[in-house]
Image (cartoon, rainbow, N blue to C red; front, side, top):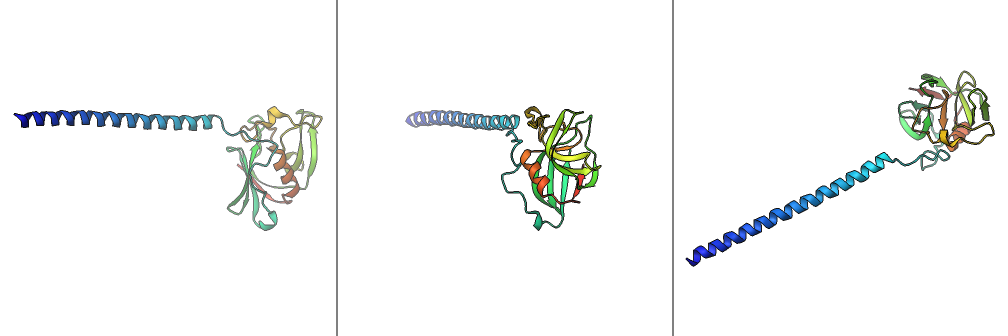
Length: 197
């Protein structure tokens, strides 16, 4: 009889232990699920609120490339990505945020070459916008790389500048950050190949 009682106690203890382990597993699983859900929520919030682009500053946190060391330099413009990639052959040297032409006034696609025309600034009375640090790549002063837009007084227009890298909204030119445009204007050699797609 004692043996049976002993077995009964042991069976009961096993049952309690099993329930406790099942409960612990459920709690651990629930905790892991909550932790995973929190991580996913943080990732979603980061995706929903990407790091703002500083339209005044260089696009990357590294020095601009030394172009004297780049014998196969060319400029790759992606309308889909709103980016300008400086490349040496197949090697990526530097990536710049950009805004290309709007659907109503698109940037031409194809292969072009940096032309001789360039300047510190301009203002277009027809569009009511100007820009700084421009370099021509087509039609000798018509299609340009330049800074985010300025008003008639030469002040940058923040609501336009804040679209840099996000939206194609220029009047067919290619907008760059102020720092990138100044560097591009100063350093990119005449006759450098430009591919826009």
